[in-house]
Length: 112
Length: 114
Image 1 (tube, chains in turn blue, brown):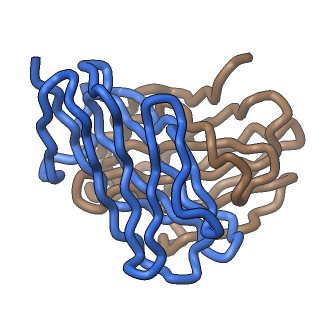
Image 2 (cartoon, helix red, strand yellow; image 1 turned 180 degrees about the vertical axis):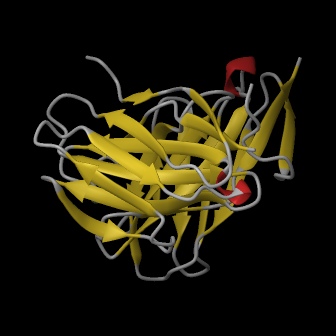
């Protein structure tokens, strides 16, 4: 499949373990954040979002944490599965603007 | 419901040529955004269209242009292609644009300039 990023940071986890993917965002004024998952040959897929008035949000097997003090987002995936192998991007929305700024991405590799 | 459809899926062009890519958004979505994805630069915003008007624009040269039709379908055009334009071009649609559950992305058009 197409290469999303040849030199992305890679996180390798054992199947069944929990994964934590981190992201530093750029603008303290950003008020909306999304995590996307991109599998080889596909476009990014929405996973979970969070607004700046929250510090934690949970979905199915995923949790996003927001630390505005240090401009940091994390994505936690519980009981990581082989199907979770992908590149994960955080995206920030600046002041309710019309575009998102994406982070460089992290490649998650799930080991059997 | 049908997702975001991008055509063609793959394209090979020669330096100096021009190219047009097409994006059909999810039915009812009025905002279409375009992104360029490369291994070196990641995902970079090109422009966003809403109701046939360009509403926001990224930092790309004027060789990159786009338009949106009354049915919300969008096209982007790159003129005078350069080798560095080789990338995956993604479009994304949303109801209104902005922070409303983010985008739904298409699978992209892989453009190779030789």
